[in-house]
Image 1 (cartoon, one colour):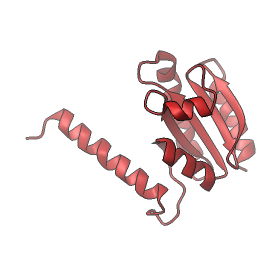
Image 2 (image 1 turned 135 degrees about the vertical axis):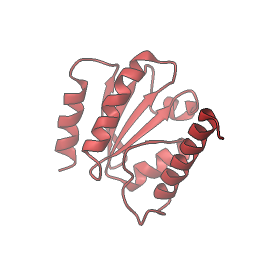
Image 3 (image 1 turned 120 degrees about the horizontal axis):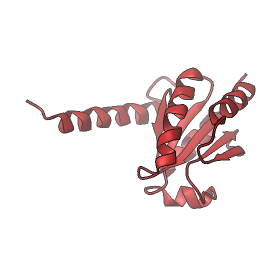
Image 4 (image 1 turned 90 degrees about the horizontal axis):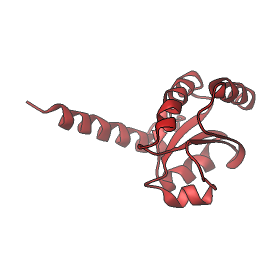
Length: 140
């Protein structure tokens, strides 16, 4: 019998493989749905490929990041097919954090046509509404 940790690892590995397949066009060119954890190369590829990208710069140890994460996941479901949502772990992607001027986490940056459009720093009341209104406006 497979232990829970092993099964969890195998499921996560398969999900990552599927996301990478989508990023490389293996999904018939469809826009990735849900929240995609990316590295530097995948991040740049997504920015060049999709019009509206919402990037959540975070770290596992960051409590405010854990508060923001369900908001990002909810919006990713709501705006599936209209915007791509990515998570960038700043501990593993320090180059991206530096390139994007990330000085505090969580930082959520909305990119339009590969360029930063707006950024939100921290977990605060009304974040979900502000993000939703902006994504609605940009993706219509």
